[in-house]
Structure formats: structure tokens, C-alpha cells
Image (cartoon, rainbow over all chains, first blue to last red; front, side, top):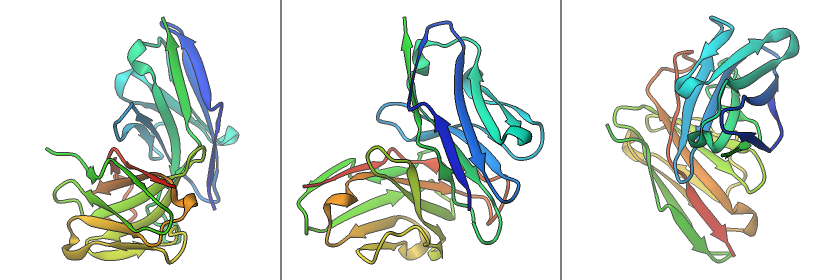
Length: 116
Length: 117
């Protein structure tokens, strides 16, 4: 079975400061990892995904994440926060094997507040 | 191209009533997923359709939930009778890649917010 833990349900950052959202996973097989973002009144939008190619993955809106197998982590970063980054962020894992299918397993989400 | 749409956006019903949620996937997407987020908890998988067939329904909580996808286009999720613990946000997602494809990206709708009183 797989699981995802996001440290911090709420994060507050100042505009222009580093955004760091933490995600740790557990999985019995090599995982595929995702970060999604949900803006108010919208659906979840894919930010980036790791599919066993490069361990540093670049996504949309200046976000990137690094897969670290030894730490079972997939933390999301953005060098400089913008007011438009205020949203809820979800880390998710998919195992893509016969028993698990295609389903995504999500962490609890981290709501980001950006202060001017 | 239209995204995944869900109807209604909000629903408030009383315990014991029936509610039907609808999801229209992106045109041409064979895969359709239902997920649910109960307040304060993580988003959890309910089931996965490939066209009109249920590929995986391991996340369906009990037999009060019935999902259908007749004709392989839109899907409905019926809750009958609704209980208080069914309150939450129900998300639908769709994708076009094949089963177990690493290229798959699931596109999510805005969700239906269900409140059972």
C-alpha cells in the first residue's frame, strides 16, 4: 500500500520569499509522484510530475520538485512567491501496477497564504 | 477544449434523501475517475471507469453509492440514502492514456460540494 504525508496543513510566506512545501511518501514499488494545485472554486491542476526520468522536475508557474529516493521525499519549491500562488497544494502518488491501477493517493493538502 | 465539468456545484440535502452527481469528462477521454474529500481529510479515490466498464471500484465506501457510465461518456454517482458522513467534495477526473500508462495525466473538475444535514 502507498501513502503520502504533507507536513503542514497551512503555510504562510511573504511575497518574494521561498516557497517550500514538504511531501513524503511510502511505497512498496517505485512511485510516480505528482503535485497538484487547487485555486479557489476551480478543479485540481497538475503542476508537475515525476515519472522516473530526471529527479529534478520543473513544472508550471516557476515551481519545481526534487525526487529523493533515499529520503522518500518529493518537496515542492518556488524561489519567489507571488500573490497568485495562494492556493491549496496536493502531493499525490501513483504506483501504476496491476494491483494498484491508475488511482492517485493524495496527501492531506497544504494551504498557502502569501502575505504582501 | 472544454475541461471536466461537474453538476451541481453545490448540493444540500437531508439525511435519508437521494442525490445524484454528474460528471462530463473531456471529450475523447476513456478514463473517468471519482474521488472524494471529506472535510479535514485527504482526497480519496472512489472508482475508475474505462469507457463504460468499472476498472477499479475498490474505494467505494459502501453499497449506498452507485456509479454508472452508460455509453462511456458522462458518469453519475448516486448516493442513496445519504448519511451525514457523506458530506464532502466529490471530484471527477478524466484522462485519455491507456491503463498503467506513465504518460497519464488526470484532469480534474471543480468538484461538487455535498452537504448532508
